[in-house]
Figure 1 (cartoon, rainbow, N blue to C red):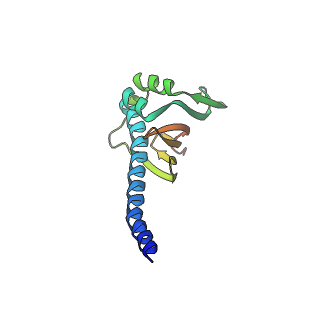
Figure 2: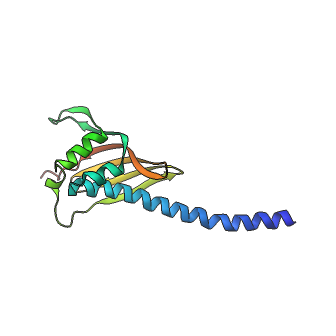
Figure 3: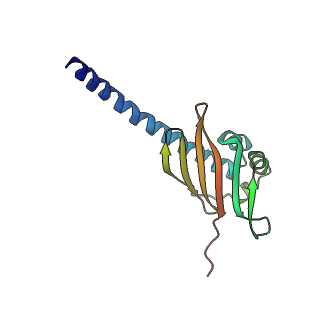
Length: 146
């Protein structure tokens, strides 16, 4: 009987902690994705670098000239493009960045990020206690044609 009471007490203590950890992780995951996009639009190379894993694999299905081919961008490329202001040129007041955590399990997450310019799916992982973007797949979010 004593063992049952101890087990119930341990469960009651443990459950709220798991919930709190989950909420903290989801908040940190969203912050990583938001920092990534804000850094792009604000030309913040330091913030961009902080949000990415050094072995980032970012891909698009469009080549530089619009042809259908797989385009690969590295973390170093993203930091360089950010520093050069490619995203800053797209900045607009009241820019809407929508971040949705699609799925989360232990140390991995799938996230959807949409802006007026991009539609991205991110794989984010907790490495050495920090959430960083490992993979990104994106398409340009073009306005509808009339």
